[in-house]
Image (cartoon, rainbow, N blue to C red; front, side):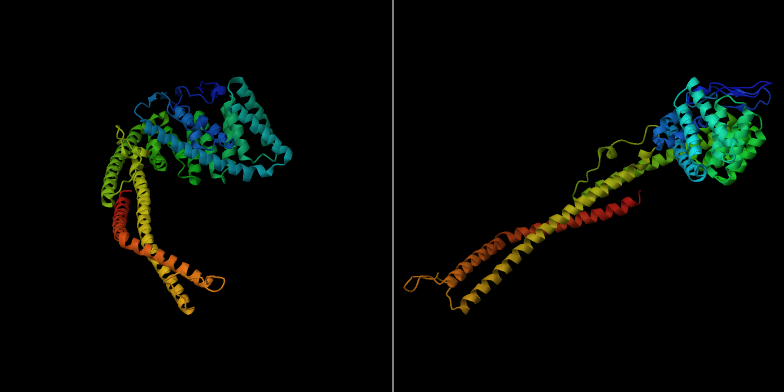
Length: 487
């Protein structure tokens, strides 16, 4: 959009069909000498908010586009070459999260507060307007203007009817569409004013409408009104970073440097990553030194955190190596967590900050597996010994029972039963007891032999497994205690 100002006409917005492109350079008013730069974020904010309704609720879905608009090669004459990629990514991510949260809140307000008042035919009209608006956002040039006009006709009709007169959602869309279709800015201001007035009880919508109203009022040189609108909106949303930034702009245009500086401080407190974006804002030029100081402070703090995080990472790796030696084990840590160092720039990033925590998590998980294996090895030795003794006891009991049975029946167990009588038959009970007795005695002899031959080695293996288990337990406790202090 290019803002054109002369002595006879309201400012007009040219090229509305390219509303998603990067804005041109700043234009200076020859009358007030106040600087106005197209707000790159404001220009795409509503389309982004609307895109959440159609499924793009993930901030990552539009973060790249948001980044390209926030950090073009130049904006308003200010270069961004001194902004690192990490800082640009951080502010883009913070704003993307902010926009998604706001979009979801706006959608909830529309569904729960605004839509229920309309009947079937009126809902169909709203659906048609929404479809035309969404279609317009996907095209450019005349096709976009025609879609916007279609939506505008429907919404203005609803806003003029009693049912839609107090619908701040409709008034906001009317204002935005008027803005995009080159309507006189006084008409745009009126629509945004109604949206702001009627949305006082709906904080998210009120903040959005107030920011748009203030932007139009600044274009109309109603700077004092813009400041009042934004200050009023801040009463309900005192930590909204974009409200605070816009209020700082308005205060700067009024020449109220002290108030502007206070608002900048509050803005950066609400969203610290904005320190990377604000130095390129022409409307905040008088506060640029303070903003740059805040940015430098953030950078120094970031580098300090990065250095601290790198040192914690190194210390954590040392703890892991010492724990491995204590437990006589190897803890498999992913190579990506063992290799590398802080970025050459020395700037903080998420990976650097989280590296010690990730090493600790990987090491403790591996330690848990190692401890489970050590305990399982010990248990196997114990169960082997227990089984040998249990089997010996079982066969001894069986042998005693068979001997008692033989004595009760006066049967001999030293020799197998012989055939007797005319038919030469053996006593079946004697034969059963004799066979079972000698089978059990054979099994018992095998158990005794295994106990004599292998029990010492099994006990030695048990002692070693106990020692290793205790070593791993000690290493595990030591690692968790000392590692927790680094994360």
